[in-house]
Image (tube, rainbow, N blue to C red; front, top):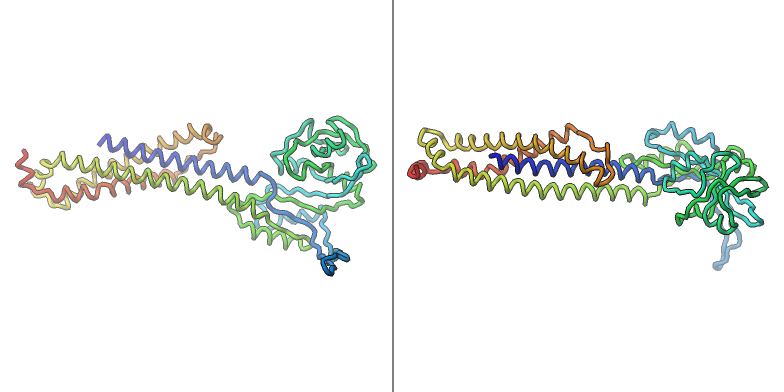
Length: 368
């Protein structure tokens, strides 16, 4: 029985540790993916007219162009799923002249941009003042600029606070400046033409959020970056499938251990069972005795296994996936571990109990 308690405790501990670590990994991966940039884009709504004949475009124009004001973004706080909005990063993109060359200049709120793009690495310092800019690595290389240099950009004397390290995106070719400064240069106070939204949407309905934002900003076109959302869902799904498969294997092994151990116990106690039968115990009484012992063993193994599994998860979490402080002592997991141990213990003991109940008392007593 001690061996059986130990076996059940080990099996339960493995499943509990796996489930706890997987839950923490899901939460960690979801949080990191949610912080890995925008998954909703907002741009001004516009209708395009293109005139072409024979493959040659004669003219193209945009009409019914909507405008997005910085003040309009306050409406995002009124949507139903506003609690899922993590970062709102407005931008105003415009062309500017740098050393007689045209470059793309993006006006941003640096505190929001840094939160949105946690992977950014900067050589030098982050821009903090309105007269400081961040240079994309390609722009800096083309113009021979380094942190601390002074430049004239769109007629403004500015300081290069830092240079973004190459990340293979359009950021490498953009000059980032204070949003208010770019609005002043472009002559468009309070205007933005691109808003990136980071929504914590591992569990929230991304399509409903897009619709809600569309109603709040009717002059804008709102779209979800489905690739990012799909990646989140696939990652979480793979972790769940992995935990389910391993848990099923461990459960099957635990049931086999219980079965073999209880069969051995019944064989060793054949004479005892025969004596009980000779004293008047019915078959159901014998079965109840075996199953009652299995129940006690299962409950004991389940409790010990849950404690050991949670301790293992807390101990191994930081080394497995940097999960320090994220493993939660969930009472529902404790209940699940206990119920699972009881089901495995009783399930593995049904056949041994039935076999013990069919023992012939006369043949069993002859062995005394």
